[in-house]
Image (cartoon, rainbow, N blue to C red; front, top):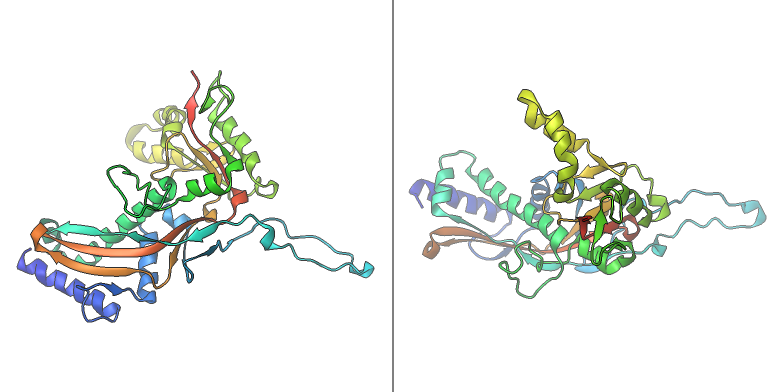
Length: 337
C-alpha cells in the first residue's frame, strides 16, 4: 500500500469508527441502528431490481411476515338495522409466511494494488463504500432466487450461486405454497414443455394459465409482473430485437423492446440471477428482505500477509413472501421436442 493510500484508508477507517461511536474500526463492533439503516438504503440503491422489492428492519429475529400491502377484498355492507354486526375482514385468515433472520457474512477484500488506484481520487471513501455495498446487493439477489438452505458452513465451490447461504424466495414458495408450483406437465416426465407438441403452445399461454394459481382477488391486479429467465425470453425477443434494433440506436432500441415485452398479458421483469427454465408471477412488492436491527457487525482489518485490506461484515437476514396467495411458480420449462 502506498503512503498516499495509507492516509486515505486511515481516514476512511476513522470515519467509520466515528459514525458508529467506537474508538477504532479495526476491531469488531456493532453497527449503530442509524448507520445500519443508511447502509441498508445504500445497498438497496445499488441495483434497479432491489429498488422494487422491500428491505425492512425487524426487531425480532424470527416471527410471522409483516403482511405488507393489500391482501384481498375488504369492501362490503352490513345491514346493522337487523342487528347484524359489522365484521372487518381478518388479516389473520391469510396464509402467512414465517421468517427467521440468520447470520450472513458479507466479507470483502481489496488488494493493495486495487485501492492504490483509487487513492488519487478525492471520492476515495465513496468508491470504497460503493464497491462494498454493490456486492452485498448482488449477493442478496442471488440468494433470494437461488437459496435453498442455510448451512452451518457454506461451500462456495459446491454452491456458486450461494444456494446454501439462506432460504430464498423461490424455496419459500416450494416449501410453504407447493400447490402454487408447477414443475411437471403431462407430455414429458420431470418438465413442463412449450411448443406445438408440448404442454403449452407458447410461453404466453403458459403464463396465462399459471395466473390461475393465484388467489382469485389477485389475478387481475394491475401491478402483477412475470419474472422470467433469460433463456426462455431469448428466442421470443431475438427476432424482435433483430428487426427493431437498426442503425445508430441499436442498443437503445433493443433495451426498449425488452422493457415493453409482455407474456400472457403481463409485463416482463428481467431479474439478475433468476434460474433458467423458470417463471414467477407475483408483484415485486410481495418480495421482501428482512434484516434484524442492531444485528450488523463490522471489522475493518489490514492483512499484510495477503497484501490486502478486508472488510468483515455480517447481518441477520431473512427472505420473505408477504402473501403466499400472490405467487405462481413454474419450473423445469423446456421446449417440446
